[in-house]
Image (tube, rainbow, N blue to C red; front, side, top):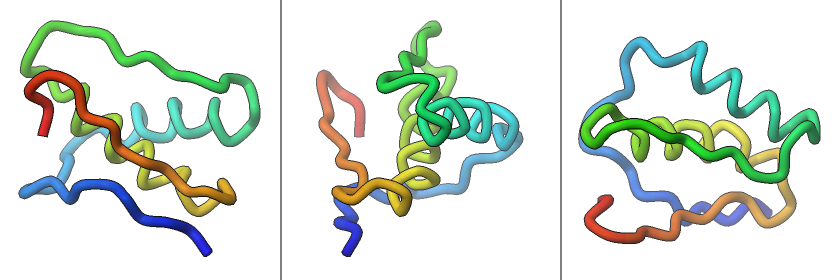
Length: 73
């Protein structure tokens, strides 16, 4: 059973499918155990991270969990 502990954003993520697939692909393929998203405030790092976590959660026994720091969601 996959645990779903991810917040649901109020709107959908638009135009970032390639970014979601690139980050998710690295995690799923075992190329990376951790992916860091960096950039200036307001560019959608948290939203992208949530989309990636939602994409990969079913492939991991314990799913994915959101741990908020600062003011994110």
